Length: 328
Image 1 (cartoon, helix red, strand yellow):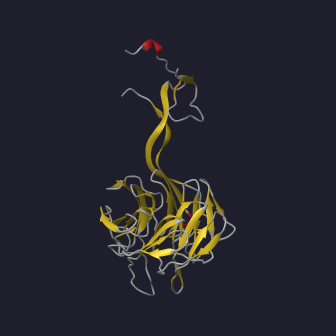
Image 2 (cartoon, helix red, strand yellow; image 1 turned 90 degrees about the vertical axis):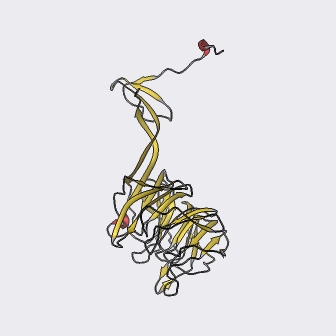
Image 3 (cartoon, one colour; image 1 turned 45 degrees about the horizontal axis):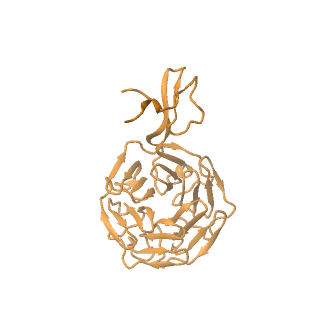
């Protein structure tokens, strides 16, 4: 039998204004508003404006986290510049890519350890690959298949390159998949079920998702480290968007959809099985942007048309917030 007289709790703090820096689970009574309040996680699912890129651009690559982002390359026309985000503003890195280019892909787990690969340098696709250590870029072994408008995911030492366009070669809708181990690229024996370029990808080298792409498709495929499997399609077709997250908790945003002139600001959430359309859209509809972070804290930056090429937006899926506690 429980001795209730021996159980002690904590008194609820009475304050005239809400605490400036509450901790998760903290409860207090605000004597000014006569409300009982607490600090807890709440679903937000909305975008808010962040600091603009210093160099507006489209067809760039990047990633990292919402408070430690990385942007590199892009079309303005082809640029090499690299920028770092601290959660408020972007700073120009003293050195950029060794090969200036746009329409490239990246594997950017963190701001200080990234990989950029593929892209377009007139008159066609390139195979160049480079690694970033937080301050400078170093050329690494090239892709086996030169391509641009490809998709990438993973981290610097365990990356995946998939799809793309070989122009002026062929095919224009590539199926090839390559794996990077920190030293070299290896062509995977099997590729995509649906060849495409400009798809959005997220995940790790052994558990990834590739969604959408040209020719403006709804097709989605899941990657297990060896093969691609067709899974639940997107609610609506799109290409040239961006993504964040992992295979079981992904976020897809922006791009363009049918007809090809329609810019998108919509956001989709993926739980590993199905897609959900979020009612809150981005502030700026755009395509050929880049993104990073997680399903609960993502970053979107760059894109086209002008002047959206410098715009940055921050996504909050869930966050700690002060909430009024009621009995209803």
